[in-house]
Each structure stands twice: as C-alpha cells, then as structure tokens.
Length: 273
Image 1 (cartoon, rainbow, N blue to C red):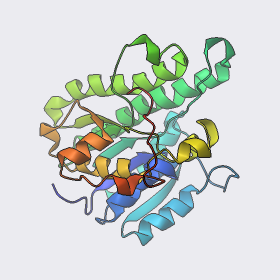
Image 2: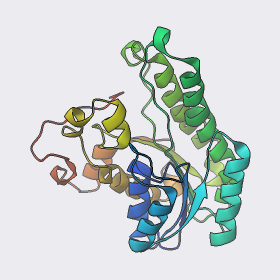
Image 3: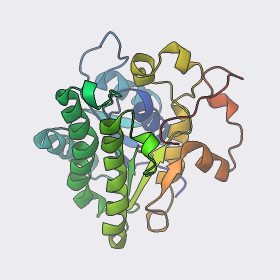
C-alpha cells in the first residue's frame, strides 16, 4: 500500500496532539477518521475538541465523525464503533493513542490516578482492540498501532514512576501478545514510540512545560512514522516496537530538523529509551 485513500482509521485520543496529527496525515490521502475522544467543550489547558478535530480533518482532505468516548467504558467504545461502521462501512486501522500519565513515585501516587492510568492505558487499549478486531479481520490490510514504548526491564525505568511504567508497558505487552495471536488473521499489531519528547499538552502541562517543549519535536514526526507503518503489508510487518526517528531514516527521510520545535536546539531523549 502507498495510500490510505478511503481507508477508515479508528483513533483514540484524536482530538489533539499525536492522535490528531496521525489523523491529519491520513486525511491528506482522503482517509476516513473516527475521532474517538472525550473533549466536547474547549478546556483552558487543552486545545481542541472532538468537533474541531473533525473540522480540521475535513479541511485536510479526509472525512471524519465525532465519537465522544471515554475508553474506560465498554458501551461507549462499542457505540463509537457502531457509528463508525454505520458511516464508513468498516474499520481498517486502529490507533491506540489515548493515554493517562502520572509520574508520581509510589508513596505519593493517589490510587485514583493509578486506577485512571490502568483503566485508560491497559484496559482501554485491550478493550478497543478486542472490539475492533472482528472488523479488522474483514479489512484488506488491517493494522493495530499502539503508542507505547519498547519493553525493557531495566529497573531505572521503574524506580521513579513504577505505576506509569507498568501501565505503558501493559500497552506494549498487548502488542507482544496480539501480534502473535492474530498473525494468522493477517492483522498487524505494532508499537510506536518517539525518540524525543513531543510538543503536546501533556509535555506542556506535566513534563516540564516550555523548558521541555523547546527541546522537543512536533507531533508530525510521529504521524509520519505512523503513516509509514500502517501502509505496510500487514502480513509482513507485525510485532515490532518502532522508534519514530528510526523508521523515517530507514525510509529515506533524513531531514529531521524540520520536526524540531526550536531549530538547532539540543533535543532531549524521551522516557524508556
């Protein structure tokens, strides 16, 4: 495949940040997008809503529907899937992008934050996959892409924020298991993670603010990497833990400076790498 024209993507957390960037990249080909996210009304610290994302996707050349969904709840995901099938007739690609983060150490982490991370990151990813797979089995080139890191059991990734690490690794373990489980069905299941911090609301609000943003890259680098993954033949590309920078370089995209928030600034390395 070299195009996502008329393909349907079901993207969680697509109202802003990386999820929206992936949607906009697919829209350039004329793809259909289910914008699956919670934000109905503008928030002071969170730019964009499900509805503004749909408008931007249509302006970029795609089609889209708003799916107000909290992926902690099975009935809400199923309603979003039903709406997607009714509108577009199928699902070709699932992007599990929605994620919750809290970097508190063990003794400081409130259990409601623990529960949120595990409900969104692990359960939400598993459940979205489970409910989409029956439709992916019918697709011509089906892909599941999780925005999660490569698995690495070095204790340094656990000691400062053990709960968050486990929750993100839960998403990665879904890749490990589902890639093998659904290999014979031709469903590709892969992970993608950025080499550097990405300039999103999460980085701005939780991970150092503007001082980190200027040492980050823009979400489009992840979107371009995701595009290269989900346009590969699904039976030939599964069970991988891709890094955005590496897959771009492997595909001949060597000008990475254009993705820097601040040209020539030293780039920080992201978590888990």
